[in-house]
Image (cartoon, rainbow, N blue to C red; front, side, top):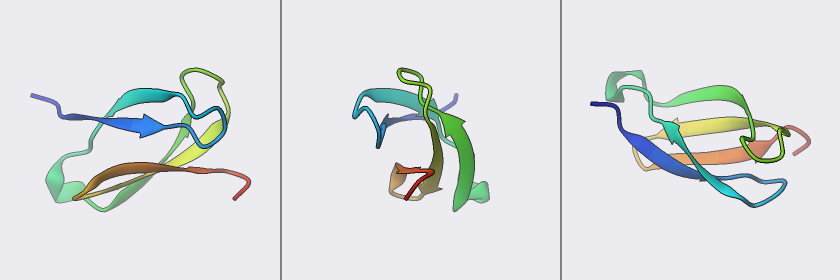
Length: 57
């Protein structure tokens, strides 16, 4: 079963869900486009979940 986590877009502040990588692949980073506003971001995954960083930060 795939685990999901909530992410808040750093641009439009909408919340959506993404699939977490397997625990043995953490920590991890992934380029991603917001599912609402389509702005690019980097998702940073760790044991505590995920947070998004805007590409312009």
